Image (cartoon, rainbow, N blue to C red; front, side, top):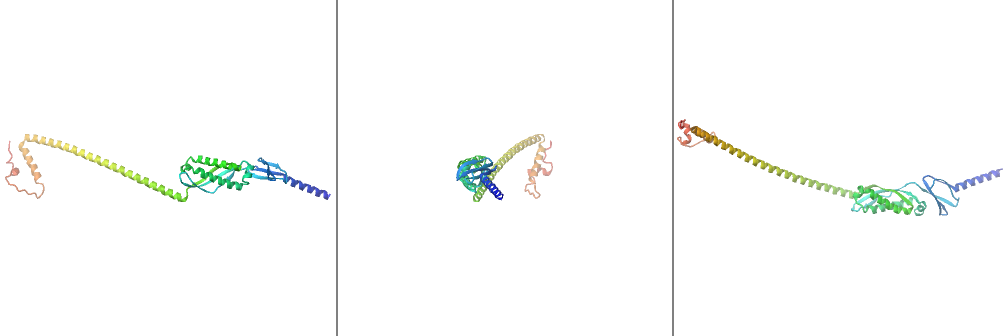
Length: 291
């Protein structure tokens, strides 16, 4: 009885060992290669329980998910001779498991090879682009060109590049300082030009205002002279009419105006003969001819 139990136990253990060596599970996120003495037999990309020949065949499990490649920061010289420090990343998926296994072997080697491929594509494409292209809407086309070139290289490894992105693109510190200095010099030059244009316009406005002022003063002086002439003419006419009406009063009025003009200050001194014609009205109205 004991021998039968031992025999059954041995058979059960052998069955378990044989089953574990014959069966394997492929998860939803995996794909598998079945090899026999290192030679490929089949590829399994459907999840579930699968069988193999025990102790003769072995299984290589590969990831079926989208994987990440994070290459080191690369310094790139653009077409306009500007330098950029580009931090990029890529996403890839294993599409040909056997080719992937034969060319790179595992994920670690694949990431190294793909990182070098991404940086090479970055140098080639960005080397034909300007800084304006990288910073404008043209960046979409630049990234598409980079992805196409990386995919062309990655196809040799049995993988497909899902996406390539530039995480950050910065100018080197020395270049940033030079760009800053150049921008400041450009802004200072524009400020000087703006001030010069402002001074020129101000001078033009002042000149135009001065010219208009001169014209206005000249016209005002002309008009005043015309009005003064008209006033003098009218005054002469009135005086002439007055003289015609009363010659003695006119002579008396003109003499008073002469006295007023001659004797202005407090200390005015005049040396004239008392019987001078100038003083004829100082002696009363004897000099007045009555009518």
